[in-house]
Amino acid sequence: MLSLIKTTEELKSFCLEAGKYPYVTIDTEFIRDKSYYAKLCLIQIAFPGDGKNDSTIIDPCEHDLSLEPFYDLLRKQSVIKVFHAARQDLEIFFTTAGVIPDPLFDTQVAAMVCGFGDQVAYETLVNKILNKRLDKSSRFTDWAIRPLSSSQINYALSDVTHLRKIYEFLNNELLEDNRFTWVKEEMDILRNPKTYLVEPDEAWKKIRLRQKDPDFVKIVKALAIFREKEAQKRDVPRGHIIKDDEILRLASSKPKKLQDLNNSRLLSKSTKTGWIANGVMEALKNSDKILIEPFNEPNHIPLSAEQEALIDLLRLLLKLKSSIHNVAVKLIASAKDLEMIARHKEPKVRAIEGWRYEIFGEDALRLKNGEISLSFDKNGLCIK
Image (cartoon, rainbow, N blue to C red):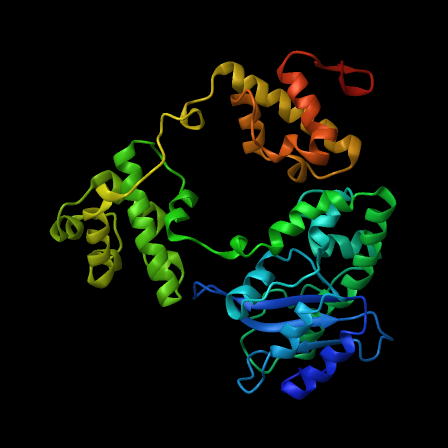
């Protein structure tokens, strides 16, 4: 059975060897159901070696283990760091050590450009590219518990051993189709530290608002700021402090004093007592000072019937272009992009920039301006 790396010397030796190769594959296992920040439990790593000592698992739960040799490898410019769906892994490295791997390759992003669909799962790539099936029996493991069984370790290790051939396949596809620039923007986003910083002032935007009344939104924003700051400070999930639906109820009821809070039957006990209740009341008290963007901007005005119809047509065009160019829909344009194209004369969205403009944006604007149309013939949907 493979043993976990538990000492700094073992880790240093492995990382020095891995650093001799053009790329390494990396994955992590973590838990975050009881904390704001993810708790790193395992790091899996492999390189294209001889199949004997070219993969391992690092145990960051060992208190005497320094991860600095691993972080040095992440910084090494001559080695490409390969992940699948890298965002959460990179967030952990950034929040725990201030490190973002560079250079970087995300096989999920590459697969979207190579015709495997939107946000394709690792298991799907293993199946389609390698014609293998993963053992999913350890999928719901609590990775913080020790010792780990051999099946758990083998399951975790398979996340990086198969990834080597997947990376090589997708890398060759991108080279053959000359599509590396198509994934660059997504990789740049993943390398940007701002991607992993959650600003309390922006936290309210993740709450689905039922109304856009400025006073209502100010209260929502004030409560969201309070919750985000406390969640970060105490390292607890946001929902353990106050849930989204409670924020919306408070914004509607606007309690003036603690007694009003206590009288509410729709709030949890924790929200009505102690430091949370005091924080809620303070946020409500100061909500008038909160700044929000004006709601008379076009983006907050309901879409007209014509704009709704145009968005439906743009959605059809997007699916057609996705099929023609064998690229995932979500990588070309988002629902928000389509809305902005319908709303604005000169929309500022990435769907009409760079390679996206060439395969979709140009025709999207022509469709909007009545220069082309969509129709069906014997071959299906087409552009006229």
